[in-house]
Length: 417
Image (cartoon, rainbow, N blue to C red; front, top):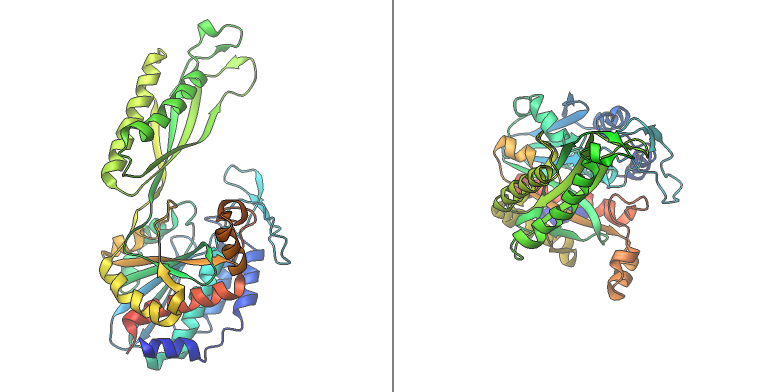
């Protein structure tokens, strides 16, 4: 551990390119599945290193394999897609991109979740390990994943033969920037990020003129009653010691003021830390929706479409025990315990596909003065921008140093000589 700490504090790798690279990615974000230019920038940087590069896995996914003799194999993953959000950070390198959004309408595009930082950090770790091959032995895999925000990127890479195109890792690692004191590396064993699903529910009805509701079966009314009843599932059917979220993201029905529509659609977002709770909730959602349809006189069954799945991120205790002491040595008081969060990720699909253990951690990225003041004044919710907000922007210097070192430290915890 002392050797790793010394290396990361005194390495001679050139990281002077990182700021320009990060700002370029931030200024030119691309939506999930459309990351062609971003992938090109990553490939251009990987050409500086002595590694085998495999592009176009599952779309724009990229894998770089660094071989350095006998030893274990460690994989580190970073994502690089952006969000359909118009940026309001006011920085000189803010995105002004306008692209077709998921619904086909023009939208602003922004790196509002820190994926540009994730990619910059992993490339920095590549530079460190490539420069200091004398310090490690084995195989290092840097995996750059598209389409995380839609929950499809990891599975797309797996479906495109990832497991057969790269060496099988012994461990998978990853990280995410989140609100928190910039530079703090937060780790924990067990459930770290929640599992999630989105559910599109279509409520059939019978259309009629708005002046003749008695001739209709109003799906909007039924949908409204379902929204109310759904709130009782978590409040009255889930043990208070457990965790579950059932949020109604959209309710769409009709196209004009004087026609009762023939259908309505709800989109739910559901999150859990426990599979048993998840199954119980889904059974309750189906029961409530079908019962409300029956109560409204709807004879046709509603339909349920599941999408946007995110696996539970359940960190392996053994990997935590291997990596955490190294992070403690490298970061000292800035290596802290994490708390589980209700957000979701598709990272876990990769180690699950390989059948190997993993650790996924969080790095704080809020300017330290802002964070300390907000905590002291109990104003974190009011004053600290969070992921997916149009004002979210990691503090660059402290965050890029911490994420780069943490990525390299995690890999070296397994590959260090």
